[in-house]
Each structure stands twice: as C-alpha cells, then as structure tokens.
Amino acid sequence: MSEPSVTVVVPVRNEAAFIEDTLRALLDQVDPPASYEVIVVDGMSDDGTRDVIAGLAAEDSRLRMLDNPGRTVPLALNLGIAAARGDVLIRVDGHTTVAPDFVRSNLALLDEHPEAWSVGGPIAHRGRGVVGRAIAAAMSSAIGVGGARHRDERYEGYAEGTAFPAFRRWVFDRIGMFDEHLVRNQDDELNFRITRAGGQIFISPRVKHDYFVRESYRALFSQYMQYAYWKVEVMRKHGAVIAPRHLVPGAFVLALPICVGASLLLPLPLSLVPMTPLAAYGGLLTWLAARVSIDQRDPRVGLGAAAAAATMHVAYGLGTLVGVISRPGEQTRVERLMTRLTR
Image (cartoon, rainbow, N blue to C red; front, side, top):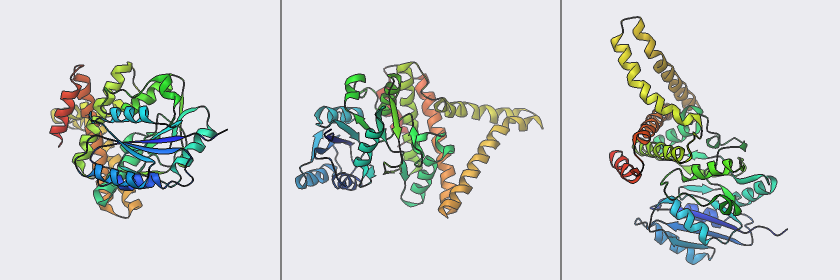
C-alpha cells in the first residue's frame, strides 16, 4: 500500500516567541512522507509572527500560510483542513515543539491501531523560569487536573482525546468539522463526537512533543476560567457531562464559602466539622508542594505548583458557574468580559 500523504495544520495568532521553533521542528522531521505539507493559519498576527512564517516559507515550499480574519481557533482549523491535501491531518499549536520523529510516530500508531479514528501523544508540559516550571508541574499532576489521562506524559492507551491529534481525513466527512461557535474546547467537542459515533482515540508517549505553559498565574487563571466556561457550552450542546471530574471545581467553589460560613457560625467543636474538607484539600496541596519540591530540587517550584493547582481549581470552578448561569447567545459578550477581568 502507498504511504499516506500528511498535512500539519498550525492555528496561530501572535506567537512570535515560539513559532520559528515550532515550524523548524515540523519541517526538519526525520523521514517525512513523500507528500508532506505544513499549513499555518494565522489570525492576522501583529507581533511579527507573519514575517517569521513568510521567511520560512520562502526557504521551504512545503510550508504555506493562510489568513484567518475571524481569528478564532476553530475557524483556523477548518480553513486549514479545507485547504489540506493530506490523507492524514495533524494539528499542532504554535506554543509547541515536536520531536524529530513526531509525524513518523503518528503514522506508525495509525497503522498499528486501525480501530482508532485519531491518535497522538500525551502532553509533556514544559515551563520556563520558576513560575513556568511550577505551572507545568501542576498541569502534569493528578491533583492539578483530576487524572486526565492525556496530561500524563507516560500514559499509553485509549483516552478522551489528545492535545495535538493526527486524524484520518475521512473522520471529518463522517462527523463534520470543528464547531466554529466554540471559541475554546472545540477539540474536546470534536473528540466527544468521535466517541459518540463509535470511534476511539489512542495515545502513546512514543509521540513526543513539548507544550510550553503560561508563565504567570494571572494568565493561567484566565486560561482555565475560559476553558471551563466553554466546557459548559459543549455539555449544553450535547446534553451530557463529558466527564464527572469537570464538575468537581464548580462544586468546590460553591462549597468553599458555605464551609467557611458554617465554621464561623457554629460553636466549638462543631465549627471544626465544616473545615474538614478544606483541611483535606490543604493536605493535598501540601503533598503536591512537597513532591514537586523534591522532584525539581527547588522548594520555590513546589510551593508554586500548589499555588498553580489552587489557581486552576478556583478558575475552573468560577468558569463553570459563569457558564451555567449564562444565557444562550451571550457567549461572545461573556468571553470578552472574562478576558477583561482577568487581564
């Protein structure tokens, strides 16, 4: 059988700090397919990203750039898929550096797992500086992300999805394109449609890539609040909970003032009872801080990881509650408000 052709679609906007590394890693793949291309779909960047892409495209005809005036990720992905020539479509973000055998490993997984509609690798979180390393550690831990398999870089097996997947092209003919209404979590929604249609998603650490996390707690808070808000939109669209863990942060944020208020109103020793869940939560964060401090050999990173995990939980919980109380049709306005408040 002839080897499948491959298109890598890279949606970007204002990624000047990372885009050259991302694209050079994609263009310098070991043993690339005979028919191989990289399409960058740019959301009208104004930080120099477009100049970097144009310069690299002048050096390598396999790279081309498309404009995305709508500037959202699902629009970029759909534009890239529509223009792609490949039998296999791979998504890679501009904040990512892939291994030299990234494409070849994806093709091997697709060949080994004909039952899989999509394959990829678990996320390897990377950070720069103390805060970046702390956030990366929190995003890699079960305490931080609730045991999401695709965030454990050692995991191999079936999962809800993968961050940078390789799809068989016919998947989009069967279940449709990315939902352009979903500014975020459009990948989760597509993965949900895959599993509902009877497809499977297989991930393996053999597919290696490094994802560089946000490098401030404020940016992390904004990221997770918006993730949660749009996750509610995905659940509302399908009338189903994708995974129970997505509801836990919202319940935590609701319970927090109740526990504190009850402890202030009740007499001793009854006032200690409502604080038990918070004490247990504090114990988990302490354990995370200790483990990361030992692994990283830096207590600053350990304490930062605990702070990052708490930031993620509160932000996700608030985003969930905002999503629940928001009315249909308000998504764009709410998204802008959240961005303004967390800037």
